[in-house]
Image 1 (tube, rainbow, N blue to C red):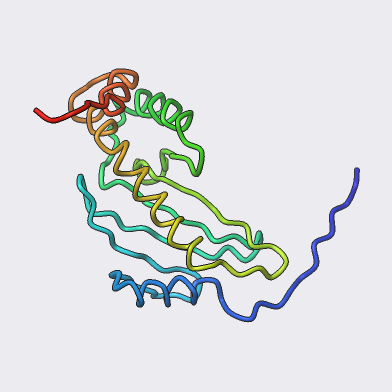
Image 2 (spheres, one colour):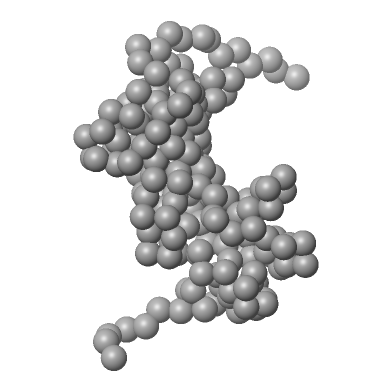
Length: 167
């Protein structure tokens, strides 16, 4: 088997310093309690989202995650897992998971920055936008499964149904 060697490169700036500077410039509500973690609060149409940015040194990746404030009851777990699979088929960037330890649905995505690369402000903005857009688009489908007892397919179909014009 071929051994891969990746050189260690010094970074001029911590990747989260760039996210923090961007958050300040954009007047985003944020908290950076640790060097490698920070959260940004975003008001959405269906919920308020707490989007976590994490620097993962081992793989040189900037990770973004946003959990729904919805606990998945054990009786709806199988149907939520079906919905996660159906939703992930629709996504080009990122994916949803059911975080088993907390029983919450979470959107996740990572930006690889190997070789000492730094994220741009546009990349950080797009990471946040992608997370919030995905959460906004599918939040109701997860609610339909959990609270209304709908199937994964009918919940997804309901949120993907687009109307034209105005009533």
